[in-house]
Image 1 (cartoon, rainbow, N blue to C red):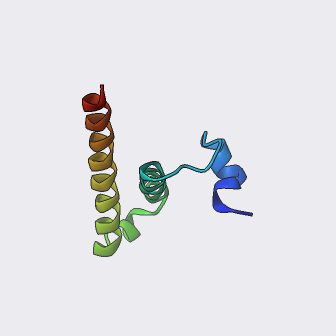
Image 2: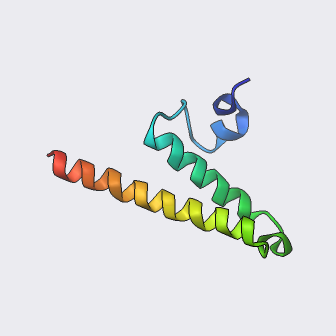
Image 3: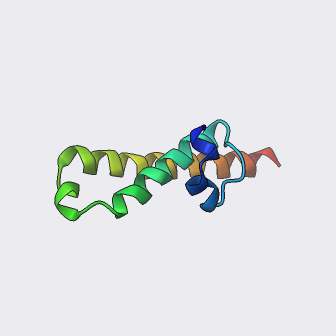
Length: 74
């Protein structure tokens, strides 16, 4: 079974496998969602917090890129 066909991913609302930028954004979103459920003692680790903040930054940079791309394509 592929990752994108699992019942957990389907329950999050993804009906099909994302492509391109959407795949990177969805992986970043999954990383942030998973870190919500990790105990705070593990989140104090510099590596975990760097990965989490990096995912948040990458997500919002790609989101703004997609919005600007759609804005200027019209």
